[in-house]
Image (cartoon, rainbow, N blue to C red; front, side):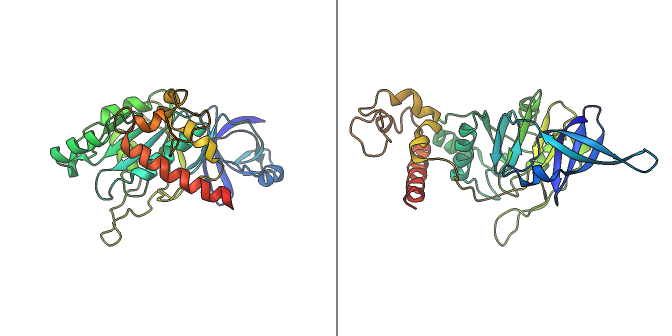
Length: 296
């Protein structure tokens, strides 16, 4: 059997890239189809090549086994990546910071390093960017600005990818594929405009695809999404999934402090200081959401 990596999944078929750069269109053995985890883009697998009656490889294969994963994300559905790059546009469409923080919570759940790419600076004024910088004071993740139009931040983005397998995630229309085309023109990924009617992007990327970059590294380009639910996170887990809370937790008056209304809460005392106010606001919202799920 050969070893390879799933680089595309669509319609129950999987494109597998082998160690020598060959691609095979594969279906999965029945036992893998019944696995609740399912096969994801990024999975490492063992597969057999299908041959015709004369013993000539047909370019097709059968996936027999999946190697254990080091991590996975439910949305976008990918596995075995080194970092999450959250891409948001500053305008057209407007940045959804709650969605940003939802993705960052999931990255913490999987112990996956994350950075935030704020795109379309060409649509932002210097004053607006200055106001946003203030809003992001003490934001606990690296973030940077980009524009495929002006070229701002493209070298920074290239450097983030070198040596890593990254997954790009964010809503449709924020410019994920456009940015990849800008740093690696040979890709020629399909892009599309933002709808004037609904103020959201149209889906141009139809399925997650693992792409080698000319500049080094690999990236998973993914379809956009605007909703993201927490399916396997318990309320008591959430405080630890906000890294800026962890250093303060031991100073709280209660060991099981949820940082909501408890007295002597070190986290609440630092909101607007060491704790970013927007992040804390979203934390409270997520905790309320998870508590409602727990009740059912």
